[in-house]
Length: 112
Length: 115
Image (cartoon, rainbow over all chains, first blue to last red; front, side, top):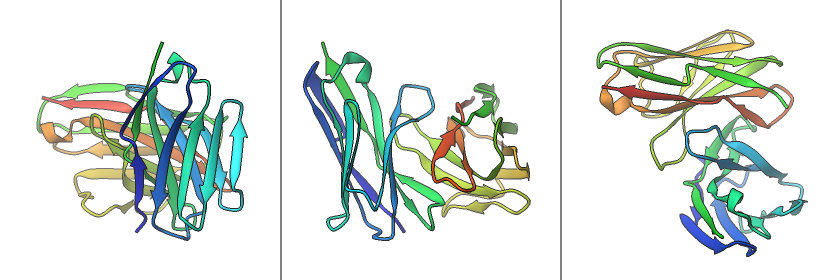
């Protein structure tokens, strides 16, 4: 089955700097890759997603890139702010877009 | 966006009791709902996939007799943790998918603590 690896497990950046989180997936049939932000005790919030027919997508300070050949995708947050501090999860679909497999998560700390 | 409601948000129970968690899609029909479990500081692990009107499909290692899932309508799925034990203490979260979209909408989660 699908396996998603996520790095780093923790990331500390200074306010205003950029943050990059990387994920790799194993199933070349995966076709949808969302990123979620989760605060403690809360539900994951979808922040951006990308489909396999697109190489890059941007939404204000957040962008995601996808390299299908290498089977990896990355989340880029620019001009980080303290409120960006949270746990971020990448995920990938498997089995006709039915199930999502999540990465292990990255704790992002933005220091002011 | 679509709203998925989950109830209760927090439950504390004694070991050996059963706990039912409800997941409702409030403004759309969810033919498929998913149940995840999240231990502290860990990722979301899929427990089972629930399809309306049929038996749930459980992931490997998840005991179907312990985690009973019922998806009786297009807007409601329930997860019952039977004979709960302290090791079942976790954050349980459901998600629902509209048939034509791939986006998942998550419920607010249920923190289960078994004493």
